[in-house]
Image (cartoon, rainbow, N blue to C red; front, side):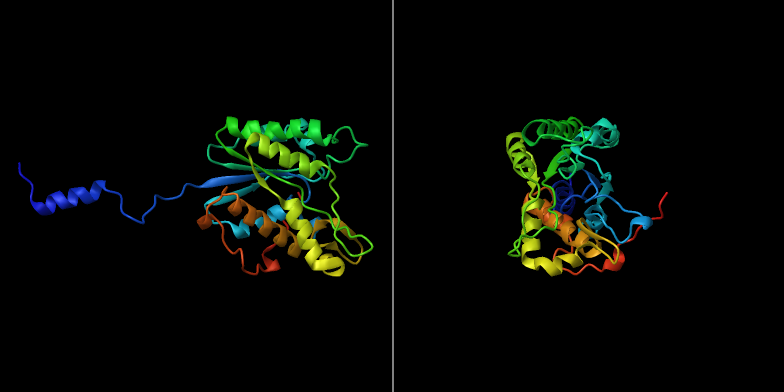
Length: 258
């Protein structure tokens, strides 16, 4: 049976990819394993806010955030409590696992949480990296966000000792994307200065908290995380939104305490 020229052309269009048209993006989940600086807070803790709560404001809806960060956990205690195993039980190929620990790893007086930067800290971080890869997911490590601390001359000073350097070295060794939130947050606190940073941390009439954030602080740190996800090409440009827009603090909500 012979075909007309129009039929041949129509058949060709059906098999040749259309220029500029891309296949539909697959829905992915971005898991967060971390501590209280990232964790979801509840109504009894308001206005304290983890940066993981604000991260979805900077991501398209086909990148879903599953915030598994928990107050008070270190890279070690998160594993010992079975939380990493539970997370890996639900993670799927092409998902992302962002890992941020150090605040509680630094507590040398607590053997349940303490890790040493160049040995046990790196050893535990490898469990997250290897676990994600074993499930076809992509591991990403994030250096710990900085606390609010200034010297007598008004300079923002680092508080995490060797932990950020140990994570950077491990990321290079393992070929894992690194979000350098420690360096970026320290630079941000320096730009803001002693007084302005109080409006980013959980400073209230009854509390002066230089570790945890309020809504503006959580939004600012989440913006840094989103920028780093884009810079390191963990996410593509279409995945990241509102990088240069103001995010209303009214978007932050605190679910009822269970």
